[in-house]
Length: 233
Length: 234
Image (tube, rainbow over all chains, first blue to last red; front, side):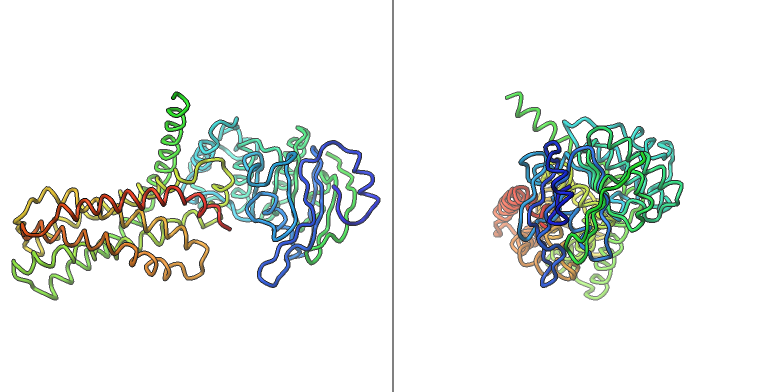
């Protein structure tokens, strides 16, 4: 990952392969409030980037811009070469705080529905996606009857379904017990080995540490620091 | 040619996927149909008690009462048309898929149309009994007029409900946008129902029906073309 500071990390990473995403001088305003201020980052394939920062630092805004759900007020974003985030959407998986699934449907029904919307793209079967996140596909409960942790895992299963090349996870460990969070980390470590990139935001740095190749801290919409992680998985 | 056929088939498959999902959700909750039915029945019964109309007056006002009951009952449905998509940010997950937004819109219109039709089927006999109606015109024409008018209401309402999704006071906004635009179709629907019930041969009811059909085609086409832009708006 490159950014506007600190310089040593930029130099080291400039020799790496073609980036998965390039964010250049991106700002995003909400009225008079600047959520992001001229951020520049480059994401390399096969790496996991952990975004840290206080509430309102701009983490979620950056993820939504990468997902193509929000347009930057200024600056450019390019994914997988020269694609805009909207053009690249089907190759990107985005998981928000909310489960982004229907409460009235079961896990399998939800995932079957979304799998059908990815016509022409090779998807995991809904059962396989649910098994990957340790949910029982035979569970007949609707999502509204799931615990918060189960909803998070079902949401991750939805994201994994389309086998995205860039995975954007907004606080994936929130509402999750420690054991489930460790299982999710192990799953993400496997996902990353396929030369796929992960960007995740969290307030629990220690949980993401085993897969963090780079730790980026945002403060008031700017990059405050970039540290190389020491991933153990 | 084969490419077009494949595209059309896959588009219809998408519509069917969305439709199945919406019907399954409603089947499990019965929220939309129940609330609409209750409201529509209330309007019909209250009006019949309040006016106690004679047979002739009944024929004159019944079309208007039926349309008003349907319209106000439908607003509660249309206000909630996208509620399940906005809850838990499902709409963002839909935006992330490569699926055509127009298919989602078309399926939503079909679902809402189906729900309003259920209410009308239940409401119809009650309506005829409470207003002691004996139509003098071609009753079978009601089977064309009412679905055409309902489609106009539902297609417009579903589109504008999506447009007002990101507004804070969307419940208030929808009727404000919808009713003025729906007015030509409402007029055509009320007047043609009145003509059919009174059997007034001097009224050009076929013209009203043609106008309704034209209105439906124009607004549905425009909505289908514009819906993806509405869906992708921030």
